Image 1 (cartoon, rainbow, N blue to C red):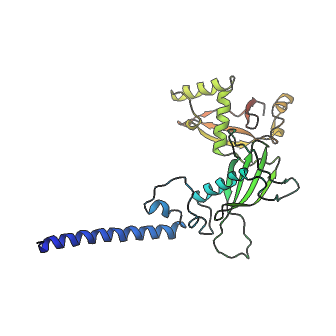
Image 2 (cartoon, rainbow, N blue to C red; image 1 turned 90 degrees about the horizontal axis):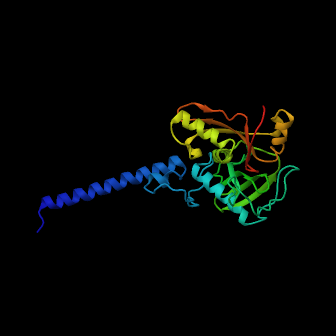
Image 3 (tube, rainbow, N blue to C red; image 1 turned 135 degrees about the horizontal axis):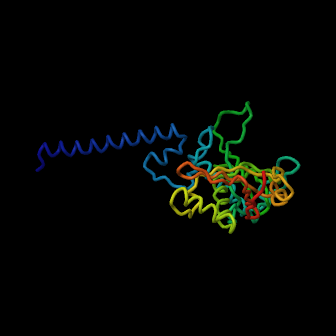
Length: 272
């Protein structure tokens, strides 16, 4: 026969468990309200991951895209390459019909390189209802074209798409790291970059992730001298970058005269 103390202990244990559940549920609800649904997947007990969020919580607001929405929008836009001709072209006279097949990223892998994602502009007269659309910029290294795709995060479809030649937005960190790989693979430039790193840090340079990188797009018209202009004559049509390389201790490696042609996967030293 159970005594009253035992019953009270069991009741208190259940009560504490129920109170903990209510607090957890309240925190989860707060996260949903504050984070537009995305943060709730992490705050309410689910582990963070790169897996696409469920459609029910994707694009549940009209503000800026969350990191999860940006990842999902990029995935939809890149995957469009497996569905050629899914969207008509739009844009100016340089835009062409988006055939999408055989796209390549900066590393030469399948699928165009994601550059940027954003919420598309809305007319001032538009309602404030949640917008499930996202605009994704990608660069196709197979054809040297800038792609802009409008995707719907709920339906997972590409709504519109356009391609343009000769347009070079700022490079991403992924592209900057790929440029470092090209420099390190160059038999003239690679040893110098490795030696500079070792001299300043006492360690070996084995990966671009060891460097603090900034980069900018480079156009061939910036080169001075006949020889320099010849080396980078296709930059603008090709995806070319300049690197600004900082070491962990704060010092810089001078790469100001190196131009990396990501499309052709080669580096050139020029006068500026």
